Length: 130
Image 1 (cartoon, rainbow, N blue to C red):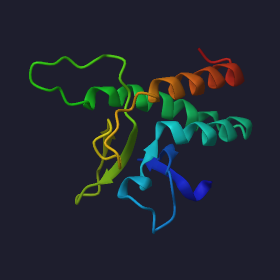
Image 2 (tube, one colour):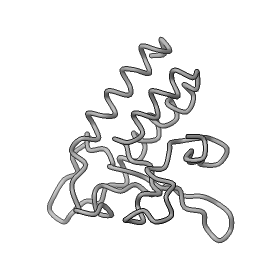
Image 3 (tube, rainbow, N blue to C red):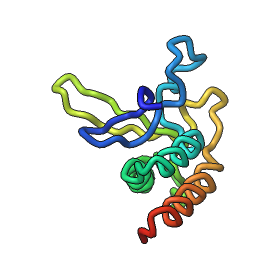
C-alpha cells in the first residue's frame, strides 16, 4: 500500500486507485474518495491517522474546484470523486479535483459524501479528534 501513497509536498494525502501501468483509464492513478476509505481504515489501524486527517481536510478544500455551469449554482455539499497531484514544469505542485468529468462513464460523484462521512466517523472514533 505504501507504493500507492500520493504526496502533496511532503504530506501523504491519499492512495492511487491502481498501480497497474495497464489500468483501463488514466484516472486510475488518481485518489478516489470511495477507494481511499478501505486504505484509510488500514492506515487508522496502523496508527497513521495523520494521512487520514490530511485526506479528509483536503477533500473539503477541493469542493471549491467544481465548475459552475452558466445559470446554475454549485451545491455546497458536492465532493469530488477523485483528485490528482500535478507536478508543474517549475517543480511546484497543484491539486486537480474531478467531479466525474474524467470518469470512464462520466458519472457524478454522488457517493463521495457518504464515503467521506464514513471515513470521518472512523477517524473521530479512532483518534478522539474533533
